[in-house]
Length: 67
Image 1: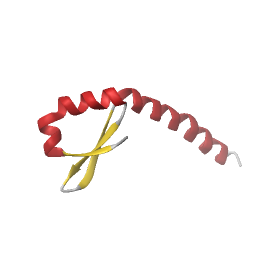
Image 2 (image 1 turned 180 degrees about the vertical axis):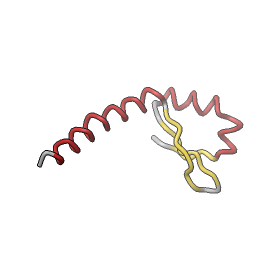
Image 3 (image 1 turned 30 degrees about the vertical axis):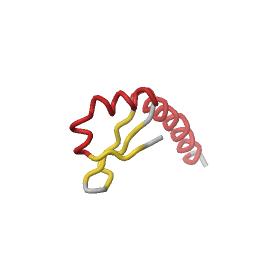
């Protein structure tokens, strides 16, 4: 599950936050003044999502081009 983390908190507690993301295979939105500015994710979860997007997105785009 994603959670919002203020940049100020991430600066102070980055090791703890990253450890939590690794344990849960989750991700966090880093916020500045209440707005999302970046996403930090567990690398295994990111690679899984990225691989899925490449596999399915690339195939879908290629299928549309052949029509």
